[in-house]
Length: 267
Image (cartoon, rainbow, N blue to C red; front, side, top):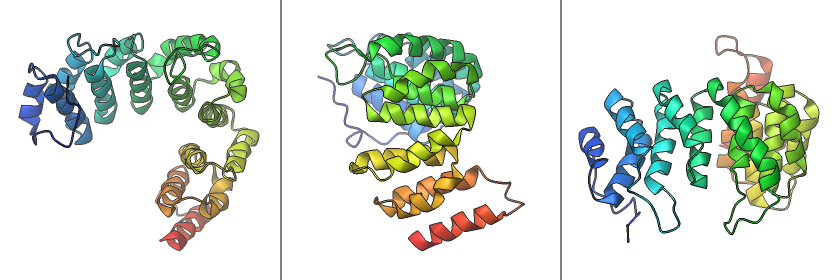
């Protein structure tokens, strides 16, 4: 049995982490891929090694999943090297749900507009797949990650494809749809629905809504975010997200000052 405990692993350097990706010890390879992403090792050697790991066939569970590929996909998004985009698009076809999810998230981080057709294809499958039972604690496709990626990548043609997910039974997927539809249409209706979600009874879902509002930079939500019944750390992250979407730093606008004042009140 492979030990996936990251805490118990031996400290690495860039050189030893890259070398570890070729070792027989599967737990060490898994840790090395995580380590390269965690510490943002942006060298060509690190990126190339992770791209190779993204196609690994050795590290496979009894259920047929690919833990090493998952960590490699996550790390490649964090490293920000666009040379990984073709391999990440290919990873969207992997049989492992979590590899597809990580690939979609990393393609979003890399601003990979060339991935839009492949992401659309996954979402089309997801429209029907979300109605099915898979025997796993998730739908057949990583719809939440794919929808968020399409919104961030500005895929306006996918609005009709995303709209049905507003009625999806999984609330986090509904929120992802609201987030993406606001990004793609700038219609306040979607932003206001996320603001209303801040009043929900489930604190975990309130945190998700906060994250989504920060990600889309929905300024009308500023005071609702500051007053939301969650930990201050989550509110500060969301407000920081709003701030990033405002005017350039050289022009400190009135809305920016207002957000900074709200942030100060939470400290």
